[in-house]
Image 1: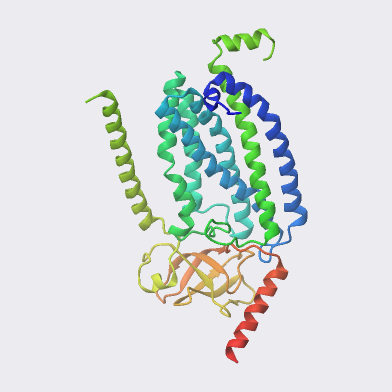
Image 2: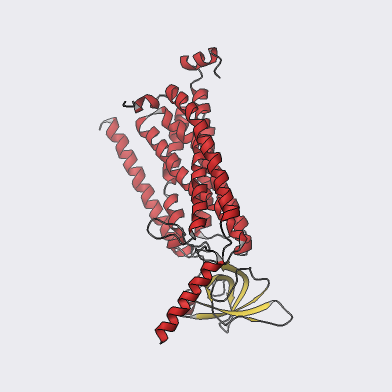
Length: 247
Length: 149
C-alpha cells in the first residue's frame, strides 16, 4: 500500500497522525532514558583521569549534539516553509525552537558544572563555548522575533531568515576545536575516526543520545499540535473536533 | 524582469553578502579568537608584549617544583619544541599533572619567566577505565623497551 505523503502536509491530517505517534515516542524516550542513565551511573567504569566527574558526559554530549541537530532541522523546516509556502513546515520550525534552546542551555549549564572541577573555571571565552552561547542567542532571537510579529505568516518568514542565516554557526561550533586553540578538548566521537572512549561509556552515551531524540520528537509533536490548533482555530475541522468533544 | 526572477536575484545577492560577511568574521576570529599561544609562538614573539595572554601546552615532565610553606609552584609549559618557565601562586586544578595539558594566563616578565595569575587544566578527549589506561601504558613501555634492544 502506497502512502500518500502529501496528505500529511495538511495540518488537519498531520494533527491526527501526530496524536497517534506521541505515545510511541514517549514510551521509547522513557525506556531509553532509564537504560542510558543506568548504564551511565552504574555500569560504566570510572574514568582514568577524571574519576567520577566525567559521568556528566552522559547528559552534556547528548544535549550539545541535540542543540546542533535541532537547529539544522529547524532551519530546514523554516527554509522549506519559506520556499514552498507550506504552512506545516513553518509550524514545525516554530515547534522545534524551544526544545533546541532548552538543549543548548543544558549543554552550557552542564559544561559549566563540568568545567569547574576539571579545568578550574566555570566559563572561558574560547571558540567552542562562545559559539555555543551564540547558538543559544540564535534560538532566543528566533523565538522572540516570531513572538513580536502578530501576523503568523509574516512571523514565519522573518523567523526563517534568522534560522537560515544562523546555520553558518553550526559548522563553526563543530569545527571550533580543530580550527582554533580552545580549552575545550577535541571530539571523542567522530565520523572519520574510531571513538576515543571505552565502548561501554560510548554505549551509555549513545543510548542517551537516542533517548534525547525520542524525547525531542515527542515534545515537538505535542507542541506542533498546539500550534496547529491555535492557528487553525477558525477552520471547520477544528470546530468539528470541538463539537465532538475531542479537544 | 519577472517577479520570480527578481526574488531569485534578491535571494542570491543576500546569500552572497552573507557568505562574504561570514568569511570576514571567520578571518577576524582567526587572528583574535586565539585562546592560547604555544611556547614556540611565544619564543617567536608572536604573543602580545606587556599584555596578559595565555600559554597552552603540556606540563613538562619533572619540571614541577613546589615551594615550601606557600602555594607557589614553578613548572615549565612545553609544546615538545620549546618550553616556557611559569611561576604561579594559588590553587591548581585537580587535573594539573606532569605530561598533561595546561593553559596558563599571565604576563611575561623581563627575564622571560611567565607570571601566571590563572592556571587551567586542559584534558584530552580520551575516556577509559584506569585498568585500560594502565594496560596502554604497559604496552607503550614494552614497545619502547623492544625498540631499545
